[in-house]
Length: 468
Image (cartoon, rainbow, N blue to C red; front, side):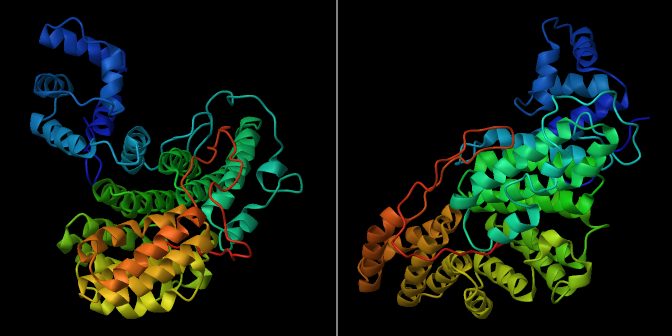
């Protein structure tokens, strides 16, 4: 009997893989069955593989024969195909393949949370595969951030409070590369011990890459983090990884993909997540829904997040959520309210959290400026945006700079206002000092960056929070 499809939004690739595996078929067997049923002898295993990886979406002809061969309603496959096509528009950041791969892996995880997603590593309740892959090179102490390593994982998290992704992405990727090499050289029991550290290292490296403006590289790294967290049997961390990826997609103009990831994250992590993590994931859902024009879904998720907790409980929160507190959650609610067209109640929490650090001030200052523009207060919007622009220079975070792009677009219709002309002059003067996006190294040995790609003013302070 075919198991029911996984809960939540369905994409065609993971659905086809699930239906195939439920029968114990290979991709070659599916291709052979399709050729026999349809009378078309030219379909190959490679085409089935492309469908499952969502590099292509089959048309009505093959959807019909897939339904026959897999013994499922054709409407089930057609609906999943329609949803997949809707997600297939190339994102503006050029990361369509990493995005599609992460979406497919997320679907696979939520369909079977106990699946071994990292080949060669035993998951909880699973017999270890025979033989670890890859060459041995690094000791477990290096993977754990021991004396041989350049920085411990906890220290790197705290460095993210003080410097932006333009400065730290290379260090995060180097730290992750050591963890990957250490895992390759260990036996099954040692690999199990090192998996949580690998998952946390990959999540943080992905976060730093995203903050440095390398969205495609960050999505690749998040995929590794999800594989490691799922194989380690840590659904809470896996949900946090997908929540981080969802936040990335909202920032690059892909609210639909962000909403899919946020909903999967909450569905997969809800049972084991701490109160703070559940609230955070609900805020991810709310922001993505609001930016995608789904006001009802945004309101529902925002209300659920606000009811859940007023603030995280320190004794129950994982160490990688040390930065989440009541004011941060209130500011998250504020930016969602701005996105929903309700800027007035967002003013106080967005103002309050901007006192924390330059990156926080830049990111939430951008949202506050957008709120003022919605209220018609152009001069106040320009004043806040000007402060946020200077904070972005101090922060060293291309992501913080990106938050101001929408402010510039909204100001285009107010070119005759003196405050707008002053802001444009300030933006022109600040341009040489703004950190610029660039591809930091990935988890498996990409080129390490030489450093920041834009000049910094002499004596300029750096500082930023891991603003969610």
